[in-house]
Image (cartoon, rainbow, N blue to C red; front, side):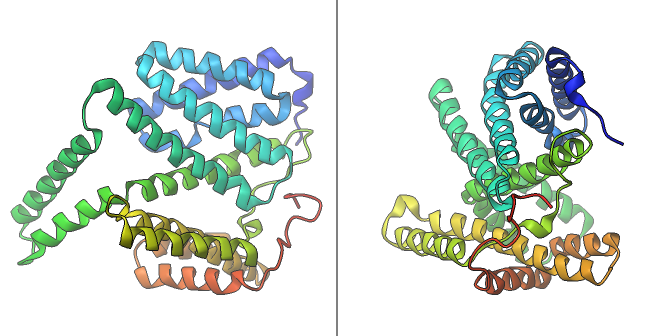
Length: 315
């Protein structure tokens, strides 16, 4: 079934996208936080179908509504994320960019904007945001330790380990923001491609198989890790730079490994449900995660160029 969105007036499309964006944000703020991952796809879809003018108008309208409901500070934060991320992904889809670019560039921008907003908040409030986050992390850690002690599930000596793990997580905040941005970009691409595949636009459904790390990209990633590690060892304020970039690169290699394995399993007609369960189990079994990373790393050197982008990023 195909819907000709061109027959609808651009203002109606813009109003619908803005209303859907505000509704998604309201639901995520009031109850189900994970719904926020869907926040960007209405404007992304509108950008591809109607262009930057109407997407911009819808973005301004939705940001104004969010600011009216939740405050000006939330509105400013959402304006940066919503407009930049939605428009970048929409532009990548319109230009038939490689899937690597379609999801990695927005993820990098997402992390950069999040860090920038932390500094802006610190400047506006004259408070040490990292100190506040560290304090909140310590409270959460203490609650977890107390709960484990009450249930008798806390082995001797593990309290120190738990505190160290949570302290390390705070130092790896930029990497976690990148991962959040990556998940957000993937979800946005999946839903945008799904909607656009039912319109007159020349776009097909999202396929992770199209995610490729070529030999050149792999060299750049490894070079970044090497430089970051060197800076971490020599410049004290950048002590965790190498760990952050290393974690981000490992996630990209893991995603590439999953894409290559999924390509082979789909050719052998393995049911999609079983494949998804296999990939999700990597969150539980660490060895499986490292297996995906290793596969993605090794196979990246087999691709001199992206073999899935002939004629664009679409099948």
